[in-house]
Length: 347
Image (cartoon, rainbow, N blue to C red; front, side, top):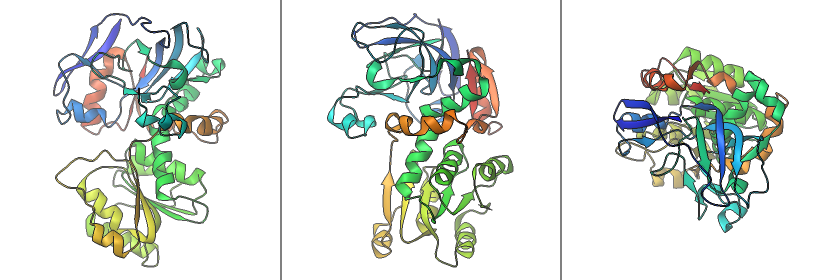
């Protein structure tokens, strides 16, 4: 089959690799219909996250089950399913508590020795604990498929951020970061009933999507100017709930600065840079809570799925470029150069 591999910084290739097969009775083999490129994939692309030459990549995908192991009982051949960005057994203590990303037997797609989502097919460990079945008729609806694909990561991660920040009816929410996750956090905050949603971003194409998703205000400034703008919008107090969806020291400093005393920050930006941007003394004095981390999206899919199916929630506008599998390297280049927000991959 064909699959995307990474060989060195900026060296992405689509190559012939062995077809996946069922190795364990808990496995399934899934034929990929839709995948996408994540902003976090760019850290490997740029050489800021180590990868072995030839390693697979891609962790957001959905498709059709082709084969199942003898112990798989919740999905069958021919089922349309979505895979969260990590596999999990569904039965360990962490999984039962909803923290599937800490599963004792879990793992990340594209790890050494495992398939990545940016390929024609994937071997899925612990299929019962990992895959979520979707209505078969959705396979013929391109828009709905794109919307369902966001359940694999960005929509669930935005939801995790909004929950961590404490988005709720009547609250003012601010979102730092105008990438796909930040935009999905706007959508999630709207779904959770936030009264006012302030999107921080300077790219109009992205902030236009933020407004479509429910943002009531847009702040294009950064640093101290962003703080002043948010304070002006909130009677000098800041936002009850702040999402940090970038991961840099500066973005975290901004998030802390624009949080209202007694408020909370939901952080889902993968941390990178020279420092954290968190001053515990400031957070202590102002009673600011910090929650978030790797989003256990598998636990959120059953809650979010009905709203995606009925169209109440549609995150598909985050996809602004579509390529086939052979075009994946060009998709990485476009996202790295910021000429694309998020690239959809069709098989």
